[in-house]
Length: 231
Image 1 (cartoon, one colour):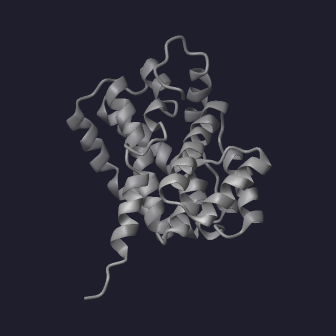
Image 2 (cartoon, rainbow, N blue to C red; image 1 turned 120 degrees about the horizontal axis):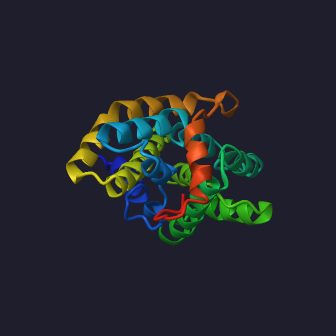
């Protein structure tokens, strides 16, 4: 019987995109905390709309494209150094840059400890040399390439994890029942599959994130009086 090489790769991807992966995703709301504070998100429908926009027009799809690019550049130090800078340039606010940078840094440390690979060690060195905290999609893209996970699968895992963090934050902030949270998650499935399929074929030069309201909410969150989340 032939060895099934897909199972270990899938298990790794599930581990890296799980809420149990210790990168602190629960601490970030991606501007959602201010949206709830201002009454823009107040029920399951408005939470689903927020998450859909963030995935299609904001960081969700942008990160999937960056992940796919990192996957292709996993053995190209010069290309990865440039991508580290580009990944942060695509963030509209300081808090959103912190969100991806802190999670990326934590992911890189954990991956090097539990799933070591020369490509991850090289990425850590590039981050130190450039002085740029590695964005989460860059780290996941390099890790996926190093461990034989196809780019499209890794993009889908990243998108699912991003959406799950938004839904989880919304369930806590609005608040909503857990079942409504799962209904919203189920409703996002076709969109996430569509975006994951497109991301590997999208060039960075063709990527134009357009979610200005989320950026404005993130800016407002920096001075919000009461805050549970870091973004």
